[in-house]
Image (cartoon, rainbow, N blue to C red; front, side, top):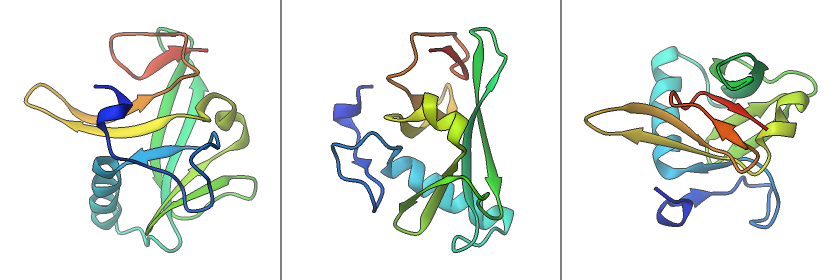
Length: 128
């Protein structure tokens, strides 16, 4: 599915032309549900996106919940949902769109990343 067919949201502090992190409506809804299930306050915590070495293509995406941002994190606000990205990961994630897919075959977050030059079949590993 192309990003043209998705309702993509920009962070409150980002103009559409900026290369920040973007998130679809579907992903925001799923993050809200998961934060509530984890018992994490949306005013203090959020979703942490990151990149680490490893995986079949050299780099792999890392996604988890965090109770608060770290000192050097970039914080992206999407209404009542916050996304935290550390400075090293932001190098690989700027311009990325986070989507959530739920089909009969698969459910989970999708990283639509223009910085990825090669990815593998699992969708969690890439090279830049």
